[in-house]
Every structure is written in structure tokens, then in C-alpha cells.
Amino acid sequence: MLDDGLTYEAIIQRLGEPGRHLNYHNLKQWRKGGYQDYLKVQARKQSAEVRDLYARKIIESTPASDLPAATLQLLSKEYFDVLLDFDPKQLETEMKNNGTSYTRLLNSMTRISNVALELKKQSAAKCG
Image (cartoon, rainbow, N blue to C red; front, side):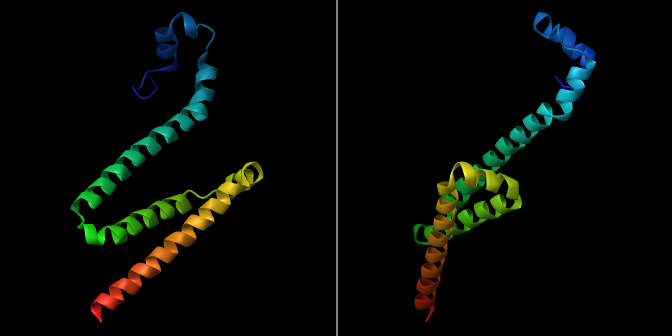
């Protein structure tokens, strides 16, 4: 309802009985906290949909012989997006709760680097 521009009072009225305990200050606080979290989740969903569509188009339009390189490009872009959202505190928490996830990330980055080097070698061998 906030997305639709309704006032706090109108939202409380529309909620009816379930919203009877709410007041202006409750909704104002939620707009600053929980609603912002909701907006972030919606933006991430939309971004994921766009990335999926982009990946499908790249894969569909790429010849089979070039798929490894295209896949590597897509994975590199995903890693770059992760780095843009990097939060050291979140990493610290994740390491305390599940240290293996960080190790997996590092291992996958190493494997991707190895694939990139192999593709570069193959490309160089074809050219010369």
C-alpha cells in the first residue's frame, strides 16, 4: 500500500480489524526499517530476473564452441556483482556460522581462473 502512495491512516483503515492496533508511528518506523528491507528484496528479485534473461540470451546466441568462454564471462559478471555488494561484517558473521561457504567461494574462483587460463591457451593455440 505504501507503493501505491496511500497515507498511513488509509493503510490502517484498509487493513481493518487486523490493523486496529497500528498507529501512525508504527507505520512510520516500519517504512524506515522493514519496508526498506522489502524494497531491497524486490530490487534483488528484479535484478535476478534481468540477469537470468541476459544469461539465456547470451547462451542461446552463442555457438556451442564458444559456450565455455561465454559461461566464464557470465560467471565473472556474477562475481563482480557479489563484490559490489560486499559487506565485511556479513562475511565475518558468515565465517563464524559457516566457514565452509567462504572456502567454497575461494575454490570456485580458483576453478574459474583455471578455466580462463585453459581457454586462453586454447585460443592462442588456434591462432598460432
